Length: 240
Image (cartoon, rainbow, N blue to C red):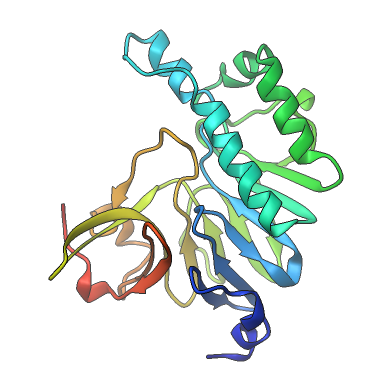
């Protein structure tokens, strides 16, 4: 255990998993959010608000209630962590029309306003939402940095440390107890890719070729199980 992890040991519960990335100490919350205790900052990726409504408009039979479910999940982790700041790592809305549809939802707008009240809030733009309206509140940026670690939507091959979203990582594991396929935080010594937080978001297997450029030497998966988050090595991960 390194010094960064020791400094947060008291905050890590039996259901969680911790790691450090450069100077940044992080706790993998079972909700799929990443908690940065020394920064009092909560990171969430790929909320994909209004995905259900977007898909329903295209003829897919999905109930358009995912935005409220995602906000309920976000409210629960905020109530536990009490962050001073929340940063959403892009694709907070599923499509360009998402913010306009969201603006018509009185209950959901009130829920978000309540979550934002009294704390800093930063929306990073993503490929699904490259532009966000001022009416959302908070600040908007393409990327930011904390403790020398880049925060952005799409992972890169730039030098240095970074945390990103975009790829919706999931891990598949087989063992004596059977098979498990679940969302995960993927990371190595320089990079972490967060799981999608949104209610209707799917996932891409960590063994998929899309992850190879970012984790050339393998990856540790912090897998979100039913009761806890646990670290799994590359050798235990299998393809779909």
